[in-house]
Length: 320
Length: 264
Image (cartoon, rainbow over all chains, first blue to last red; front, side, top):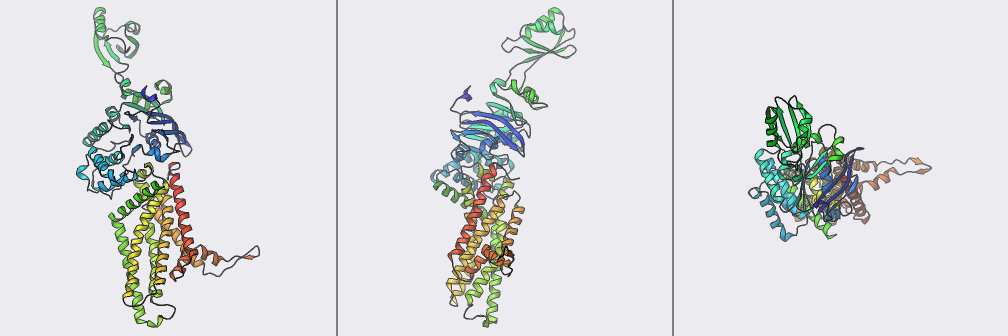
């Protein structure tokens, strides 16, 4: 896999974090290659923010280490942090300043040389569509604009890794679409880690997804592996055969009874479509087919399964 | 090193901008100036009505200058905690501190930058205050030595107050708590000065302990007192220097530890 290479931009190993004696993040391993968009998904309180704060260097891990572009975050924080842009849960803005004043400070804080500051600020404002509000105090801006100012702050020094903690929280649908499009644009030349508790947010932007529950990573896989994987078929018959007969059908790997006469057939993903064959067999044997509905195991199903109830039983086999 | 310096400058400039776009800074400046002016006018009136108070030892510079600057110290006691509470405590509350902690900046640069920024603001306050006694120079000869040493003393007191205030601010995420605790600490320093007037020498293991002397050497105010009287001694200046460096260092330690033990 690409993210196993040594040229990783960001690599976190064995990250743990304790709060008041109890461990809230357990053994998190993350590796991010250039161009990756990693979506961190999890219910509220799963430890997403804690993980992202550790990656951004505002919270020290209780155990484990983080390397960013070859620099250890603990031993050489200044060098490591040059490569990071971070948007915390609440945009870290000074509401009394104007957008231009604020971004000017951020540019100086990240050591952009004087000659390039103006261009860097203009580029960040253009990316976040803030040109029209440059002279306005941040406190006068709407939540959506403040969020964009927060993102502009994170990209003003053109970092290699962009860490965005719930960038779409609290936005209305229009603003939400705007910020989502912005993240997609930024993904073109930054590696991005974006967290959310809302699944479609992650699905819309991420190339890899990591599901966190109760401080542990319960799933870490490329998005392409998850889409339409392990498809299933829901079938119903008025005169139903038994499970064994259905199981003999080629391409079916398992049969599960939903209710009398209704079955969920899990299909072999490598096998050709069996729907026509199944319908013909039902007609020939008089099973009286009345339902044939394909179902794919979506990310949502996985998310719900992994994050509800006891997570320990799905831990080992779900991590690729 | 040059990186730390340029970051310190950037943060100091940022703090000054933040101060001057907020009404708080202007209001504090105005109120301080108003109260000081009131005292200035009152002491001048007193001298005109009772010129016998002026004698060979206490000239105008001493009566107006030192008296007024001592009053400013009292005002600063109330003003500085209001300024320092905005530094770390309020930034934790609003979340803006995350910007500083995630940036490629050392904790020393953050603390030093905030200190320099605040001192820039207070220096402006000092200039405005100094204008009052110095305006008397148009009408009467002044003892410039007394006034200059008094102003240096006031500036050093400001630095000491800011250093304590920053440390108190670094300990909490509640701005009001930061303000109250630095006010408490500053008042305690003041009381320490009052204690130095007490002639009480308890005997411990056969040795008399000079409580008054101890208090006098420890108190910020008594070191300023010598300066107000025009006695410029390097020992007093050194005291302030050590005092400021010690509290700034403690603040750096606390901010550095923020990553391991976030403030609750």
